[in-house]
Length: 472
Image 1: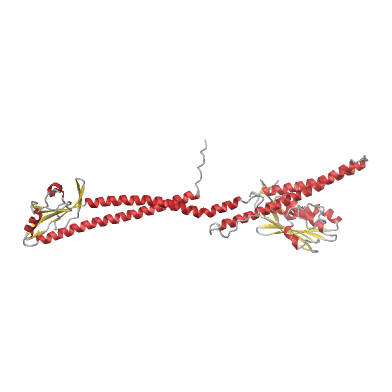
Image 2: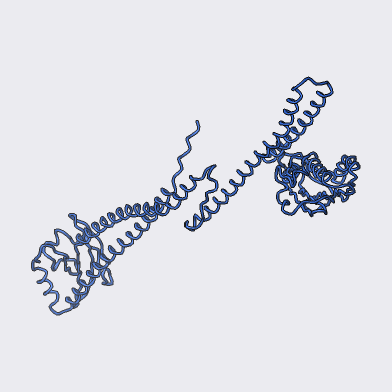
């Protein structure tokens, strides 16, 4: 069983998600840094307070009556609801000399760190008891020839509660910040994608009967202007293609209608009354000629249609181009002699192409040249070789083509002068161009009225093994 493909996500949802995620990360990092700075600052202030308190006690001990005065002072009960710190004074044998009343019940001496040998203030250590947090430190000063131990404990429960409440507050700020970021991202995304929705509505108005409509690139955001320009270019191509297709259909109908009308007319006239066998034979021969003309038009149209689709591979081979054009010249030599026209060949070189298609292209050009070259004229078939391609040139000394028609002579059914082109359907040069393009080459024409026409075909020098599309 094939799994169902996942539904693609919209651009709006991706933008909202990524913007919200980025905002959440920035908020989280900022709030965490703020929390750490505040908490660290609070605890550093407490540590400074402990250090200052011990320094003050040391100074008091250095007085003559310092130890006795401290003993009397610590024995006095402290007033107030909350005692923020406790002090214990010990002698060198760890015997208690004085302490804050009730200190033994909460902070016994064993929980304090040992004093450092050098008498420096020890780093405060946290201690939790009865749900309260204390910061404990110890110092071993000497005064009046005696050694003492000072133990100081500070109640940091309020600070801990503050840090918890501050952390909870930052958590609430983070949640609301993420929600607000999502709302802002949604609003900004909708507003930002609004031009795209308007462009979509403009695109939907375009249809087969409204190909003339355009989406002007001006007025759109900078990112959408290339899309609008590309869409207008596509509409231009589509409109031209539809126009050519409509004209092509009309030309097909016109070209096919003429031989069909001729066949029908001659048959209807022949049936109006009894006729002799020779008369019926003339009618049938005329109908056969019209059928041949109709069949030729159909074959050419099929060739052009297959050339555009290019479904198969052409049989590209390498052959002697000079020999091939000489065979074509020999085929048309009899007709040329009747028309008193000279056909000549020159140049040498190999050609990489499909021989049948190559013959058809050169034959069409030669036949077209014979049609418009007057008696006493000349047709020249030439071949030359470039490093990357072979050039085949068919030139004549005929009547030439006016400059305003040069750009259109390769179009289907296009005829410079219908009175001069009654023998053809205007498909010969279109076939030639299609054959050249099938081989990856090109067709070019130059002409001057009363001096002649030159058509040049370029066939790329491709190895026979390289696949090329075919229409056979």
